[in-house]
Image 1 (cartoon, rainbow, N blue to C red):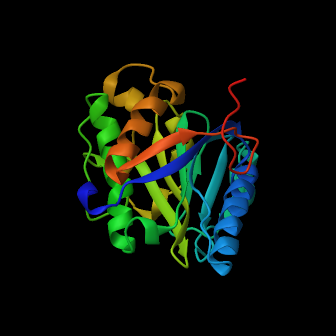
Image 2 (cartoon, one colour):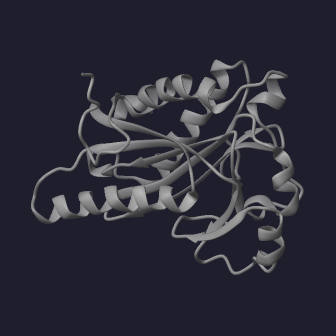
Length: 235
């Protein structure tokens, strides 16, 4: 699959642990840069955002099934509608969030293939920790009947936003209060549960970056998290 994708440079930002709304703002800013460059016949850099979030339940804007927002917020989490695909899920500490803001015309102009590429990144990252994960007929990345990575993204004019959430050492109890992604009878797992080791986001980031580069056939170059596109200052 990766050999179908042209080699490209992708900028990489690690924003650390941030509020979900700040993550949305960062994605929106980069998406706007892409849209603006398309109007002027120029190119805006492709960017990968890596971060963690404080506890938050999110769902796609078309999901009308969520009735207990007050209950979820009383648990200590925020609640946020988003423009991604998919139903309700949880994001929080111990979960690696991957937000590729890419112009797919520079990679592969096929939404299904893009989804499969995100799945493959999750599968390869798990493999680097000795965890056998797979894709199924259901969305996301799975270990048996338990989801280890959720996928939900948005594509507009071939510009992507949102992406993948990989469970590292997240408290899986947060998922007990919802039906994750609307899949009744399915559970959630994490790298830590599957390996019996404490594998946090920091330990997962480098293997994840390596997997992303393999699948998207790109070179990730880290930039200052506080800048729009500028290179990280090494002085």
